[in-house]
Image 1: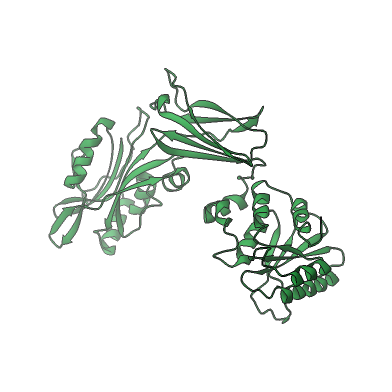
Image 2: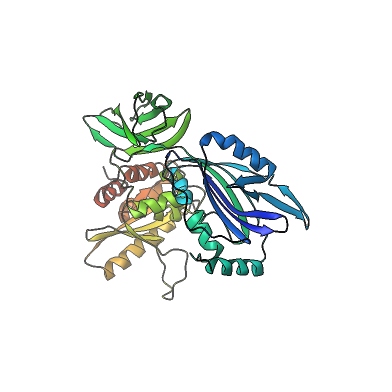
Length: 432
């Protein structure tokens, strides 16, 4: 256990400002040197055997933690002269991504956390900061101690005291998955102290007709080295669409790896931003519901590699009628002009407007081919025959709710812009 504390003196003793306990696998941890020494503020670093964890938790319940012969009160003030132990300690679980962002630890973590309002006023804080700057080995105030020593740069505020006990689950996929000879070869790394018999990989492999579900135990090895790689191979049907692998440790998921047949470039900044903000491609499954249709479609075309512009919904100075979306491919002398309708059944009028917009843009970009596309949340059965005939006459692709899944598949299977264009052109009424 790596214990780090920052505390400020009050009338009855030291009260915590920051307390961070990290359960570590290394047996050789050195104590932090050059910590400040003052009667008004203290910073303490201690290394305990993990067997003392229950002892430490009992101290937390009491509200008095003793580190290196210094008693630190982990309490909150309920009146000017009355302090009580923290009574709201939360259990949190952080997946690999969240843990990396919060703690700088590249694996799933569980933690106990508590916080309270800081018990030092702004004037007192300024005085303590000056004391720290005057040390023989100076620190730039409590902020410097928190970020550099206690590693709490993301989880605190100047007006908060924060406690965290962090237990990393040192198992993860190693990111070296490859597909060879109709098999997915994937590996997991683990800390030296973790037993192989507690590890397994749950896999789901989807084909067009079914999902193959399997559990693959990882064989125990008598001698473990730190971060030793545990390989596993998963058979793949010839027509698989996607694979999900979930790394399990003692019955809990600790990491996940997903692979589509034509793997999405998850390292691109566009995909990483999309996954962070929305949660993944599954969030576009209800493409025609919830948010305005054009908003979802703009994101979808962006993920397909188009440069998109959302012109709709604004009165521009030209006062001209504008399309909802214009989407430009990465290469090629063509682009898409897109109109969207979610509930409006006046599709005939929208088809006429879209045709006019496309022809006007063709005149100002004679070097490029313009392809008009209309998206509707209506099912194809509801679209009336007159609209279909007009779309065929104007060579407009009509994408109904029935065909939206084809575009989602185009994202999953990383279709290029030309392939997307072929999908759209096949939806011109009368096209074979």
